[in-house]
Length: 292
Image (cartoon, rainbow, N blue to C red; front, side, top):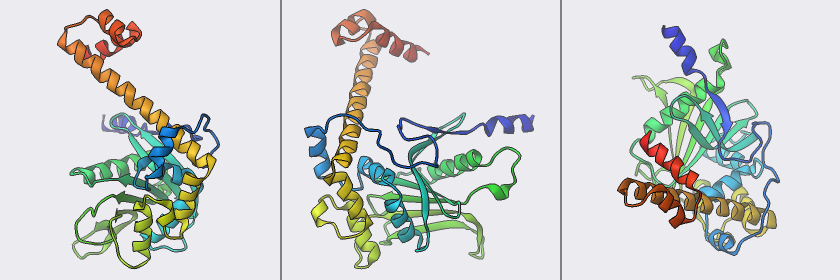
């Protein structure tokens, strides 16, 4: 019985979630955007930094330079070389699915997960455990030896000091009572982008949170931001994302309104559809989800 349950649990798979990227770690970047560069989108972009999820994702999917620079600085391995990057990639399982902001693989086959977080939430440690366990099950093929499981490094960048001790990076691994590392294959790096030291880390953190391109210091982050804010291709990527996120927000807001009206029972489904000028089938779909 236990064996059968185990076989069910490991039915994980890597899937792209709401992402037009190629569904393989073998490809990165892509010229898949179409549409106009909107005025609203450009106004939003003008004062955005890499702390913005949208800008961060565009930067990470624009080749490997930004990911490699961040990984080298944060891990301390200046020889590290990123081979591939895939953004907004998901691990779907039978329970809670996971979506990674950017998943990279280096020249040694090690996997690196990059996450942009404005705050260190109370349950972030448990969320990291979910990411690690989902990764392990997704990348260990049935019947394979444990030695085939790639090393997994987590780099979580916060818009605040996650532990309040003034460090640029907080690194953790499994250790025993003698402070000896017991598992070198998993490393967590929690990054304080508010760090303002006069060293190279301080320069990098400044560029991560800097909203004005002209005020950024010269490094690969500025080169990437130049693409995003000063080229037609970069601006089109952002404004296309902006239009999509705005549309998704409006749809979620409409669904919330429909759900509220249905729960109040003041209007019938037909009246709601007529009032909001939407298909009756959409109202019925939401009604069914409420009753299920």
